[in-house]
Image (cartoon, rainbow, N blue to C red; front, top):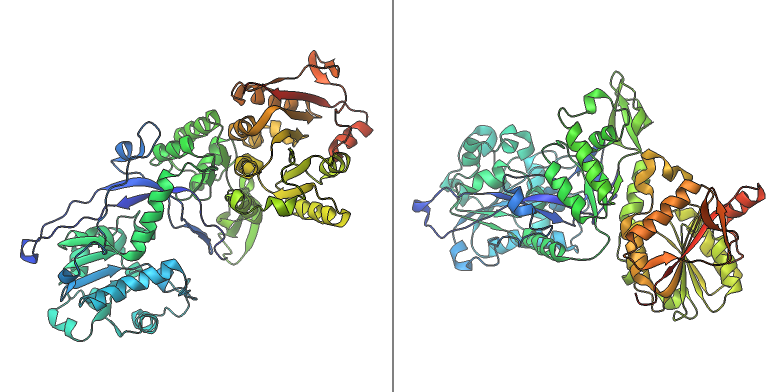
Length: 591
């Protein structure tokens, strides 16, 4: 299954690279710590099992690195190849830890920033007169042509237009000799994924890798959250360690993200060991608008929410930590998303695959990948977290984009928006709906009817309302939330209810004397919406009292829809003679 997600929010542990100008005979063991920071450029790939390139990790310095009254501390300075004197590279042996997913993929896009930077690191060192030793891990999953080191060397030779020679130092446990380096200028070590000493950061293995090496250049940013022999271990035996140009570019993006104040802020979280990562997860919950669990930790979250999870998928001693995170996120009104279904393989018949709901995986079946419903939900969340102000041309959406705006959140099949647009030509109407199929139908209807003051956007308004509406050139005069899913009142769906971030955005963007119209055929849902808007409206919203008020079960509601235009579900409720629970809020004049 191809990669489906990019540009999401998670945490990575960045191994500090340090350098000194000690001559080789005064080589010292450098001390390397680790620190955790958020990163936006994270790619998830789902190929026969979910794999998260960057997971949430903790370090022994997490308190000082992660917490500063809720804000990130400044990132540490990292020595880069750009800063290192060119003349000191002449005749030096430089080991480059490169990213195989960038350079060895089945289709290498030479026009991409990541590929060009990664190639430039190697070519730059070669042009400076250094002997270059390349090392990485690779798999035939990313390219079936990666049969062995010689095949990889041939691919790199073709891409670099330079001769790359494969070496067999690791398998022979034979340290590299200076005379071996006279055969060429660029060499490739064997596949690191075949050696358990790599992930164990074995000191002897790292010393073998770094034999005759003067300088380490780490250009594999996606591996920087791991403590590996090829990144951390080797650095202890080199007199200088630094980041390559590809690593530097990713670090630059990381620094930009660390300073951003843009919303929404979405974290996609993979990996396991929830108990160890609890502090990092709570930190993410304190900053993000949503936490999306896709890996092993999702089972712990589901277990904490009361779902039945096979015992072999539940981590020991993690239940209390999971409960604390669930409660913390709930208190912060942070949306929590977890897989709704899985592709599973039969443990007795491995070739059999079947989709199971997340809370109903049979004992003899093992989850190996996210199911279609899970992927659709994640895709929707991530897609709708983009910065819409840069993508919406309001002058194309409306004939007059300066007219006051009405927004219907959860617009469904658009009957309310279409009816209102025909009655009030002096207003523009916008429907926000998470169901993409309904949005496409609504846009077709708008086009066919020739209506120029109605528009629809496929979006999860919880995370995108502020970014969408803040770019509109006119005033926001009315927001409506009509007949949200009654299941929202059930415990397992409580995270889908109106979120604080959405209500605060409405309160901030609504014009003075602007209105908020709420209605539901389920009284408990209407009461919940009323309470949330009054609680999180920043004191700017209050109930409107007028002649439409009636009392049902002791509570005051609007007897009639004040607009005279019914949504499809509202009309269905009226036709069956059931009551609707309606209310109107108004923004204070002085707000």
